[in-house]
Length: 218
Length: 242
Image 1 (tube, helix red, strand yellow):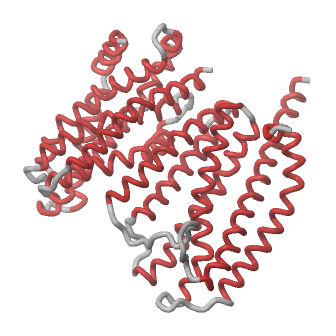
Image 2: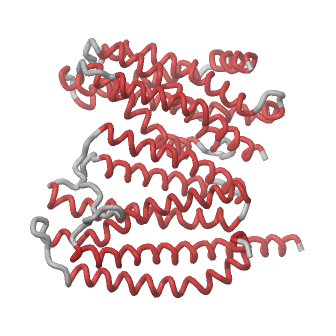
Image 3: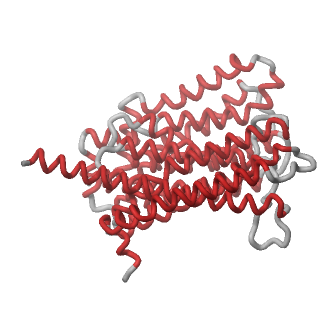
C-alpha cells in the first residue's frame, strides 16, 4: 500500500498537469472573483470565506477523473484489482494520494489567497483548519464519483454532476466554520460536524467505491 | 406463495397489465374530485386568500417526490441483494416520475411564494433541499443513460442511490444549520391532535390519494415498458445471431 501511495504521488508530481493545475485553478478563481463583484474591500471581506471554499471545491473537482481513468487506460487498474491488497484499500490509498496532491496544497495556499480577498484576520486559522479537516472528505467523495464513472468514455461532466450534490454538506459546514471564524463566533460545532462527515466518508465510502470499481471492471 | 414471486417478469407483467388501467382510472377520479372540490368548493383562507388552494398540488407532489426516492432506495437495495431485474427497472422507471414531482413542488411553491413571501425563491432549508433532491434525480437519470450495459448501469445507479440517500439526509439537516428559513412547519401529521382545518384537510387527503395512485400507475406502466424494451432487445439480438 505504501508502494502504491508512493507510485501515485510520483506520477502526480512527474507527469505534469495533475499536481500544480488544481492550485493554479484555485488562484485563477480567486483572482477572477474581484473582477466579477468589484474591488470593494468590504464586500470582498464578507464573501471571502465562501469564495475560498467554493474555489477549493472546484479545484478539487478538476483532478478527480484522473484518479482512475489513467490507470484504466494503461491497464494498471486491472492489476491493482488482482493485487493481494483488498480493492477497498486501493481506493483509500488513491483517495489519500489525491488529497496529498490536491487537498493539502489547497489548504496551505488558502490563507495566502485569503490575503487577496481581504479575509478578516481571525478567519485565517479557522479557514485553514476547516479546509484541513474538510478536504479529505472532498477527496474521498470524489474518489467514489470517479469509481462510478471510470467506465465511461467522457465521464468528466457526468462526474461533476454526480459529485457536486454530494459535496453540499461538507461545503455548508466548511463555509460556516470560516464564516463564524471571521466574525469571532464559536466555530467548534460546525467544525465537529464537518470532521464527522470526513470520518464517516473515510470509513464507509471506500466500500461503495470498491463495489462500483468491481462492477466497472467486470 | 412468496413475496418474491412478483419478481418474475412474466408474473409482474400480468399483474401490471391488470393494475395499470384501474390505477390510472382511480387516480383520475381522485384528482378530478379532489382538485375540483379543493379549487371551487372550499372557502378562501382568512389571510392567504385564494392562494391557499395551491396546497392541493404542492403538498402531494412534494410528498411523492420524497417517497419516490425512498421507493428507489428500496428497489435498489433489492436489486443489489437479490438481483431481481424487475426491481432495478422499477427504480429506473420511478426516477423521472419523482423528478417531475420535485419540479411540480418547486414550481407551485414559487408561484405561491411570489404573492405570499414577496419572492419567487428564498434560500430556505426546505426549498434548498428540494433543489438538491432535484440534482440527485438528475445525476441518477444521467448515470442510467450514460452506461450502455444494462446490468452495469443497474449496479452503479443502485450504489449511487444508496450513497446519495445518505448524503441527501445529511444535506437536509446541514441546511437546517445553515439557515432558519421561511417555510412553515408541517401541517399534516398522524400523531397531532389538530392538523390543518378540516375544510382544507379532506380535499387534500383526496388529492394525496390521487397523487399516490398516479405514481403507482406511472411506475407500473413505465416498468412494464422497460421490460418490453428488454424483451425487444433480446429478440433483435437473437435475430442477428440467427
